[in-house]
Length: 276
Image 1 (cartoon, helix red, strand yellow):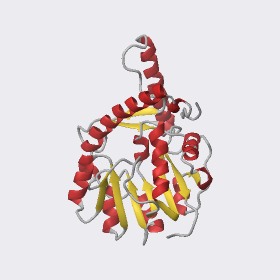
Image 2: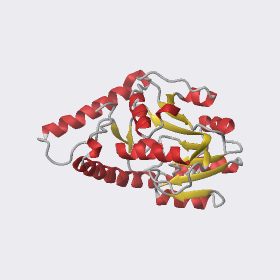
Image 3: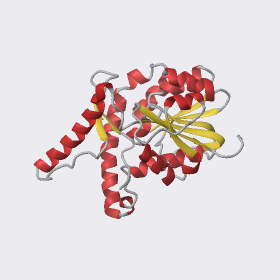
């Protein structure tokens, strides 16, 4: 196992069944969590980095917003005159998105199996850490392969992810995540490994902070090494790099160090060939 990826383990029937069961559990949790936050994400504006991303890369091209939720980015970009399609697996979120912006295009589907033609978007975006909601290695690889498949020649895939090595103020976020991980395993061993197993390493449950009374959410915190391994497994390695936000917005992607301490990191993959 390297960087949290057990490539060999996913090939056995037993481990795949365990992966599928874990995936179903997390997807059920995420469905409730994201449905509870639709009132915020259906009306919230673009973040400054997203405004700059659209200004730099989004004008006059076809954009796919993967993991669009209640349509925050898709709606805002549509209002700015962008050509964008939003995709999300959560029916409640897509329903709110369609009500909020009836003239925008939304598709209810999993990012692991996009019902969209090959090479149909010049910009494929998976923003605001939607990728971190994928609970299994197989789903992460399948998603990257799908994002690459629908990206047009000369286009780009941009995936924004949470960083496991993010320290936070005084290092408290990093310490908290480590203590939480160790605590789960200590409790598991303390109860004689009976009952439900703890959630996996670098997986966290966090309290919703966008809407009152929304259910907790799940995120898998990634590392630079893991993202590179996922890109390699999805056949993106020769065309991708892991960079920080400033490099994405500057259009000059330079690789970051393996234990990059920033809040986020981005996988940037550029598809060879001339734009269609």
